[in-house]
Image (tube, rainbow over all chains, first blue to last red; front, side, top):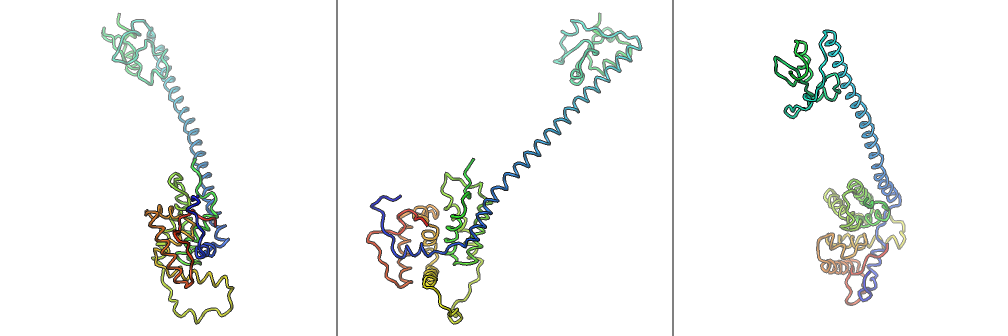
Length: 159
Length: 175
């Protein structure tokens, strides 16, 4: 608002320029107002669709991923059980966990004594097991450990 | 969340249309350009920043570009002999006065016409016009004063202007 000392009366010409200015047809005003609102509304469904698709994909992929992980763990478990059964049938004594085998460091890898007690997680992350090979204690992952057992090596640390 | 600049579009459509019609003349061309302005505004509504100014100057910035595009693409229609073919039926005095005023505005030079359109078509203040055109407010006021003088001459009617007043100094009048 202008201060009172700056206010003035409009001239006739100025009044005329305002009062006789071209006015938009009502149909144009209605159409453009509606289009402006429609343009605004269009955004909400788009966001909703994006959110819904994202949620569905998350749920679907999450479920499949979880099942896949569990399936891998079950396969690993099944493989270990088969190995143990095969070893038992050859009268190979099971490796017994000992405090020495658990506590022996091995290049930063975790070490467990008995593969039969190991979890699928331990198999997946290359848990190493002690085995006595030609008088030397080796720490091997499950496949190597099993192969050495089948060749007659003794499980656990060397005496 | 930012305020929607086109939430209440109807009064904005009227202002923009008046500006465009003062620049290009009343009719289908002005309607097309106004539609184009709002189409662009809807498309770029997210780029509007309310902290940098009002909605109307933002729309008029778009409108100025649209008018320039339309004027560049326009084919001039010869009007020399239209008087002979004019509809002889009597027109209302009011309609005649409007036609006379618009014809006078069309005879202004482009700069004066632009200022008149912004000031009296879109109801911007001299300050808002200065911001839009990136000029000083005083420059706009003086230019508007000259444009009104020129318009008076064209219309051929004596216009009484209060001594010391400068056109466009007060704020926008309600339409």
